[in-house]
Image (cartoon, rainbow, N blue to C red):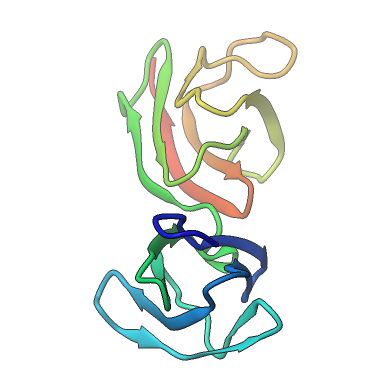
Length: 169
């Protein structure tokens, strides 16, 4: 590796990273999360094995003997997808319900609506990047649903959000 060429950090598995720094050699590796908590790891044959995987986003900093420094930011796979906000309005609904979602990573989403007895009455899939669902208060056959309490579930990868809504016309 020549001067000014940064070490490369590639995630292989949940807690294993490949450090590409073949010429000058690794001098120091630091792993810390957003709360500045430090984590230990073992470096064997260009592979870095974390002894404990952080729960939230974390940084790996690699410094080689030539003074090159590389910093990489990772979100652990076990943290997975998670909703940072789910807004459902209006409630009670009389003609439609809008679902507004914010997810920490882009992924496809699936909305399921159940009646109060637990029967699935509606489902809709959205591709990654789309963060709005509008339900027109009809079942899977296109028939208007009755007044009452309904339960929703939104799935996005390993994330799920659940709640209730009221239809009152």
